[in-house]
Amino acid sequence: MMLEVKNLLVFFENALALNDLSIEVKPGEIVAVLGSNSAGKTTLMNTISGLILDRKKKEDRRNGERITIMGEIRYEGMEISQMWPSKRVVQGIVLCQERHPVFRDSDVLENLKIAGYLSTRRAMRERIEQIFRIFPLLERLKRRSAGLLSGGEQQMLAIGIALMANPRLLLMDEPLLGLSPLMQADLARAIAEICRTGITILLSEQFARPIMPIVDRGYVIENGTLVFSGTRDELMDNPEVKSAYLGL
Ligand SMILES: Nc1ncnc2c1ncn2[C@@H]1O[C@H](COP(=O)(O)OP(=O)(O)O)[C@@H](O)[C@H]1O
Ligand SMILES: [Mg+2]
Image (tube, rainbow, N blue to C red):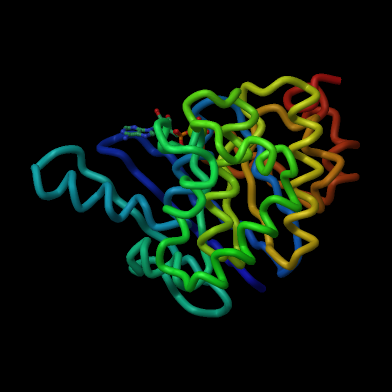
């Protein structure tokens, strides 16, 4: 198993964001976490990437909101729930956040280079070439300021930035959010291609339909609790999943 989340529980002050949640991801899979607004998708992504530890530390330091995290996160058999987010990135766990920020005044190529500043020139060049193979549009726009890109183009760049960190497990929080149907289809295809390059993918979405064609399995969460899980076909056949997340 590449990722095993076991009995995860996250409290914000007194709000229970994730309740005894367990999920698994095998190498080479594309797994979706489906849930409506405030179901706990972002909390889950931030907990797996470790960002929540950084957040908790800041809150503790200024005596702010109390955040409680319990449960296990295993990555390739290693217990990582106390591992700092930057160290998880080195281990290959990279998060592309919901509406991931880009440097708006820098152009597309500069954004990728900034994200890859730790790698050798050669590794950087190869990675950028690979990103341009996945997103040919980004190559055409490489001299354009990120701030002038459309929402979909910015999302491609955000995924490119995440790829610069050389992930083995790529986490994507609502990658299709707010994009046109055409752009969603393009991005879904690109995500499948990223998976074919050997990167395992865990993503979250509120509206499942555009992502279903490329998903192997999925988990449905409501109020931080797992309510259904299954293969793509099992999800597509489930009447509640169909009406709530597929709009069918
Ligand atoms: N920093 C926070 N403080 C308090 N409650 C939070 C915080 N972040 C998220 N929550 C709560 O946790 C639940 C899950 O939120 P979130 O993970 O953002 O859901 P989603 O990404 O699925 O919309 C929600 O009820 C939300 O209000
Ligand atoms: Mg969210």
